[in-house]
Amino acid sequence: MSQEIVHTLKLQLDWGLIKFVSQLDRFDAAWTAIEKREGRTLKELKSIATVRSVGASTRIEGSKMSDEEVDVLLKNIDISKIQDRDKQEVVGYFEVLDLISESYEEIPVSDSGIKGLHNLLMRHSEKDQWHKGDYKKLSNSVEANLPDGTKQIIFETTAPGFATDGAMRAMFDWHDSEQEVHPLIRCAIFSYEFVSIHPFQDGNGRLSRLIATLLLRKCGYQWIQYVSLEHEIEHTKNEYYRVLRACQSNRPGEDVTDWVQYFLKALINVTESLMNKLEKHGVEKSLATRTNNILKLIEVYPGIKTGDIATKLDLSSATVKRELKILIDQKLIIKEGTGPGTNYTII
Image (cartoon, rainbow, N blue to C red):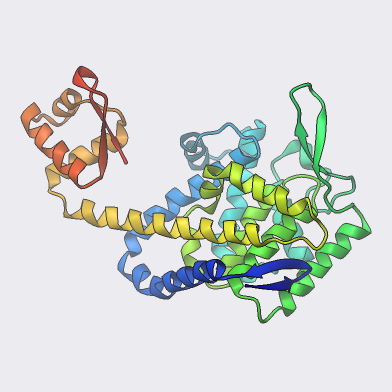
């Protein structure tokens, strides 16, 4: 194991880190063939991933909207009616994600590029109009709300003004000149440094996750658009914050090995999830029409019971039970409850 200095940070290069990078690069090498084979399915997955990404990233920051509510909103956006703060944040996040999806090659990793993304992210948020698109003017230390109503500073971010300007400039210069560090590690370091500087008054967490997607796309990891890194982070939110805070507590010059490992493992998890979904879709395509109809019904009505399936599809209970066993054996649905309360849900 050797210790390296990457930008201004310490990184322990060990076999575990190398294994993560190798696993992701093997997946990426196989991706072109997978993409050609699964074109139509990937369009569906991209739509699902977009909703999950928008919902998860805004919930991490306190939004209460479910993925279902996010989906409905994004299908019926009417700017004049976006008065609720959660909805303002959801629409802003979606618009930045959509811009990255369509134009990632043209978005510069620079002051102007990042400020432009922040301006779009905050465009619909009434309370953020005074600072959108500009670096912070006031200190924005990360605080925790204690049970007694007081606040405790968890992490001191970079001071506003010259300190933030200089830190961001140094980060952009490093990004532009770095040739030796593996792109995946470079993406992890950039995301960490951005959220640690906390350059904007608000929205830094959301923007850091969008920037991660932007950088990965720019580095050629195109599969990131079909998965939700944000959903993976939401699922492991406690670990996400624990690792961030543990590293940040030793600034400056801290060791960020734990963060880089977390970031790479999150990417591995989403690639494995993506392959599971594609495999599941292949199994679904091979199912008989009747079996597939039952599967689609369960997807629309999670928790549905055998009798209700039989009624809606005009089938006998015996037939439905046979088909349900096929779906359970294929690990496409799960059976919950017992007796009259038995019901079925998509895995």
